[in-house]
Amino acid sequence: MMKIYGIRVSVFSTNCYLVKNEETGEGFLIDPGDYAEKIIDVIREKDVKLTAIYLTHGHLDHMMAAERIREEYGVPVYCHEAELEVLADPAQNLTSRFMRNGYVLKDVLGLKDGAEFTAAGLKVRVLHTPGHTPGGCCYYLYEDGYLFSGDTLFFRSVGNTEFPGGSMGTLARSIREKLYTLPEETRVYAGHGESTDIGSEKWENPFVPNL
Image (tube, rainbow, N blue to C red):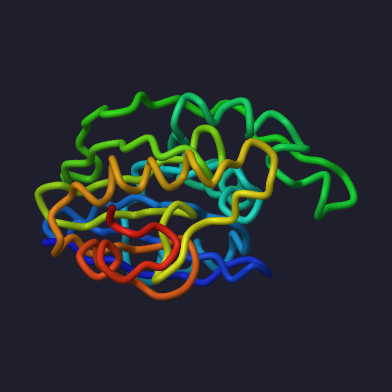
């Protein structure tokens, strides 16, 4: 029923994901960080009727292509409500650090922790996982057993907590309370690097031991 296409974007090798419901042809994007035309080419190649864009957080390498794709398809952009401030601040979204001119992404819709909704016919739950950024979140497709973790959880690693608003203690708590409580077979599609699963991270991730 569902197909996930990973698209490597940005100079930071960010994982953008195109999720397609093969029964309806509808789909959504997670973290279009750059290379908008490359992403659009994949959407066309896979014949996806795009319905929405979801951001795990507001750093530039996860949102810089969102505006162009929103204009192309006329779809809304969502993030956790606590991340709206990050998107609106070039210092927090890191565009003032890595670009000549700062950038803000406007007209983004906020989601609440625990919110459940249907995207392209697939059931999604929002998990607020602050620590990398104040409003960082994961998208949990709870009926299908997939988690899009952004820069919260990586294969045997975790997101950087040295950027504005970051906290290792907060991130570790988010992972233990929100992610390690998910079924161990849950497949994790991270914002960078390879995919993993909750069970192996729970027992083998050296940054957040399962205490």
